[in-house]
Amino acid sequence: MPESAHTARAVRPRHWNCGACCAQRGFSRSESSGALTSETGPPAGTVEATRAVAQSHLVRLRGLLGELALAQGWATADELELIAEALVAWGEAPDAFYARPSFTAIGWA
Image (cartoon, rainbow, N blue to C red; front, top):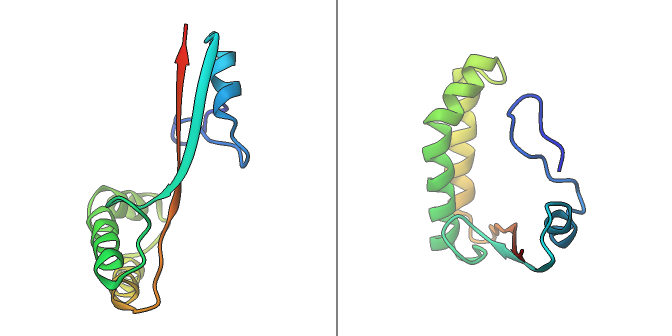
């Protein structure tokens, strides 16, 4: 898996293959799975669930992620506040939905 020059974290290609990743690292056998999740568990499809996701994102936005965005010039303080307001509004919207892919692989040596 390639590494990002900016974060030194692995960057997943669009079609990441967990089994191939395990094989490349010397595992003789692997099992992989994927699911849709949210920061609070299953995908968020209720106002209560999307509100919790929005709050989770607000914590990051008002913490290290927001500080990094300011330091790198990716956003101004006013823009971050607009994003925060939009997150709160989205979290309260009755038709909001949130899910992100989550991948798991286990390998045997």
